[in-house]
Length: 199
Image (tube, rainbow, N blue to C red; front, side, top):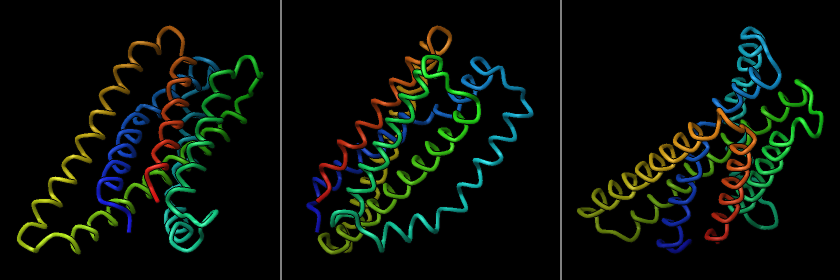
């Protein structure tokens, strides 16, 4: 089983990257409204379609549990999600240079959202593994405290990522939005780094 410290650190990093990606939807809104001059009705239609990604959650969980890539499940899927997110955000950062049209942007947006929700599922599965690890290693009277402390740290780390993400977004969005997409691409690289701590 994964060593406790490595598992705990991988969950912290994963929660941190999840927090850093929290303002992604607002960045996409400004991308549609400012760059493409999209109407609010069109944007709402796009968001409605994208929200169907939640239907895929059971399928994502099934694939994560039953299909490994190169002998790994969480590690391989984290690397795959990180690569997809990084490439997609870099394309959005160069949307004007690449002459990306509205519909290609929407497809990229959909891919990013599916990738992000899959990352959340992986993080949740790692938390379950951590809980099971603590159950086998910690006596019953101490398990609740250890489990609670671990989850509090996860939520705190994710909240820290949220704060950093929103501060950075508020600084750059009104000047050069593509800088923020560079930032999000870097966050996806960090999620790939997270996978190195999962054995």
